[in-house]
Amino acid sequence: MTPPAPLSSAKLAFIGGGNMASAIVGGLLARGFDAANIFVAEPWDVNRAKMAALGVKTTTSNREVATWADLVVISVKPQVTQTACQDMAAAWQEEEAGDKKLPLVVSIAAGITIDSLREWATTSGGRVPHVARVMPNTPALVGEGASGVYAGDDITAEERQLVTQILASVSKATEWVAREDLLDVVTGLSGSGPAYFFAMVEHLITSAVSLGMPVDQASRLAKQTCLGAGKMLVDSSEEPGQLRKNVTSPNGTTHAALVSFETSGFEAIVNKAVSAAVQRSVELGKK
Image (cartoon, rainbow, N blue to C red; front, side, top):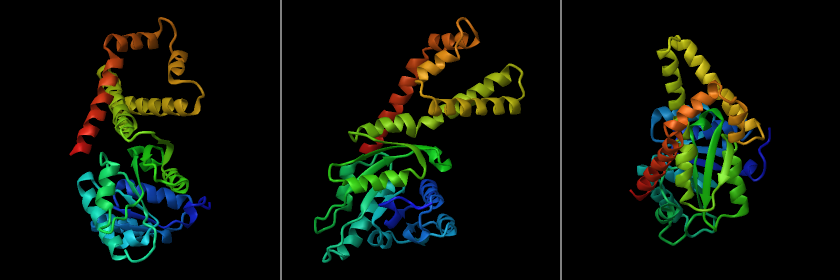
């Protein structure tokens, strides 16, 4: 499988070689991207060895990958992001006399704003890279991710296409949002969302076990129910509300369960949970 242009000829670097970076690299390689065009900077020996085992180039130097790449993915923890950006700026400063275009910077560090990323990555000569922020989620690790993306007005159509193509290696849904604050909403919706479903399945299993079912049977049934419902949501042309109605007979078992949800304030519980995650994302960004 040949990657589409402009992805096919791009040199991609990753600062940080953890789970999300590994998922993206693995997805790219599975789509036929040339391992020789991927360079990963990772200080931890174990993570660096895992990346090297995929056939890509590795180093411990952020500066080395910054001067090599057409696009740099910052995939480190938020508290390390400033150092990573400053390392890149220092490396680019050493090339200041040249006319080489700065790489596009794509950050998956939660909460770190575009303005902060630009400030930290600006060279002493005043050159500022184009920056995009991505909020992926953990199902990307199995190629079923959902990602939200935001970039400033300076990003080009080709850069936008490149980011979309990279994310397509791990995300089945990639949504470009119109405002940066909407990435906090993406965090509360799809970023934290997998945990909501895990919690629901966890409680379904506990409930069935409390009613006498063996835990292994309850676990298998609950997991497959979640998977099957998710596939119906993705594959069907009908809205979630209609799918819910389709399986709800008047005064039947499902109706009884949904009435119980409503009585317990299920909608308010979900709204409160998503809002709490969004608010925490905003707080982390300010820190």
